[in-house]
Amino acid sequence: MLRSLRLVAAKDLRIEYRSRVATNQVLPFALLVLVLFAFALDPDSGTLQRATPGLFWLAVLFALVFTVQRSFALETADGARDLLRLSALEPAGIFLGKAAALMAELLLLELGLGVGIVLLYDVPTRAGGLALVVATVLAATCGLATVGTLYGGLAAGLRVRDTLLPLLLLPVVAPVLIGANRAFEAALGIGGRATSEGWPWVGLLTVFALVYTALGLVVFGPLLEES
Amino acid sequence: MTTGGATAADTEAAPPTASGATGVAPSPVGRHSATGTKATRVIGVLALIGVPLLLLLGLVTSPEDVEMGDSVRIMYVHVPSAWLAYLAFAVTALGSVCYLWPRTRSLAWDRFAGASAEIGVLFTGLALATGMLWGRPTWGVYWTWDARLTTTALLFLLFLGYLAIRRLPAAPEVRAKRAAIAGLIAFVDVPIVHLSVEWWRSLHQGATVARRDLNAELDGTMLFTLFLGLIVFTLIYVWLLLHRSRQLWLEDQQLDTSLDAAIAERRRESGLPPAAAPSTTGAAT
Image 1 (cartoon, each protein chain N blue to C red):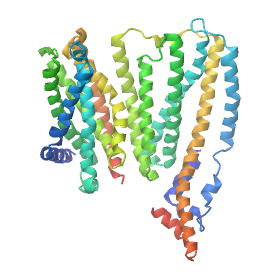
Image 2 (image 1 turned 90 degrees about the horizontal axis):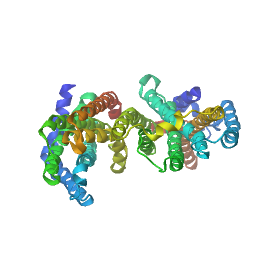
Image 3 (image 1 turned 60 degrees about the vertical axis):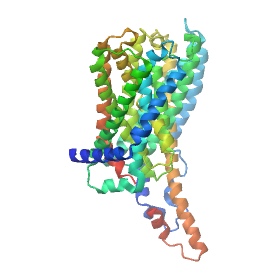
Image 4 (image 1 turned 135 degrees about the vertical axis):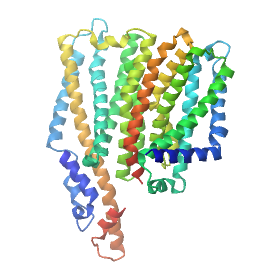
């Protein structure tokens, strides 16, 4: 299973590295969203600073939809999905591999976005919250990547997938948005929050990631079998 | 109901024997051409008796609330609707699990899951609408970001997505698998959503107003009316579920038989004998 994971993840990342869609299209899009948010919310009144965690994670969610679509568009083209099934890789390994590749892409994206909000939004950063930020990002991204892989596999190959995927994916990741937001607020000290208030949310995000990893390991096999 | 569903799955797996030689008016549909049975008729009649009784008790007999006045009567529709919503989605999840589990795999489970989700979305919508109508005079706002309300709204959206997946054109088995997985993903999300929303809201405010709606001490007639409402709505749910799932089965049958009939027609036109070929071609597709 670990070998399948490594092979699939390496394949996806290699394609991304060569095509550079993530860095040349999705990341600029996410940064564009950040700029648009500044137009929508007055940057001088402090609303923007207070809303920063929410805006960050919303931008991540939008990017997630694109990344998932991209990740499974690769598998649908030229019958790659059938070849994947013929390759004797374990379905659980394929699931974890695709999720791992997705997670790596998202982490890169979040890094870019993070630099963007620090530079553009003038957020109050504090060193004490760094561990919380890293833990939140890892747990939340893991959850997003696993759910994204599940629904991506589900919607792959459907003619209406471009409109269907956001409808399916975004309500399910609502707890991630809530949890990651609160944890970020605690880490940045927005509204006078203490850093310790953020850790229960990291726990919730971890549970979310674990639940969907387990579900994915079980149902991805049947999902791939479908013609 | 389960036996009917099982035969349905069997005939879909191997249609040739059941649909007979002609392929035009095959026996499985003929046998179940109506969706009603004795059991559903009994349930339907009981529900029909229950609804006017509920109306009478809810609108006339039961007293108005000390604090809420007449608006408390919305509760007799609102609470059963919300209960049905959760019941229906639980049945959808059960149907999805049973479909995915290889030993119980049968399209009957898929149809139950689908029918139940449709009813669930309807009653979630009803619960949200009646809740808003009740909230306006009671809290002064149509909507508040209370944990229970937010969870229900997300549930509504989650299962709208599920129904969108079901409506995509696909072979019954493909659709069933896809829908079952989507149903599971959505259902697993519900407790997590609830927990996160509850934590989120409790950070901002203390005990929410919504907690008050049912915990207030209820008068005997009011409690009985509420209880009757739960029973009547559950009867309606069961009735709708049975009819709708059978209707979905007929729809699947219709797909098979209309193809068979069309092929038989073509064969007649070209002077070929109406052989047993139609059903095998039907199975191949």
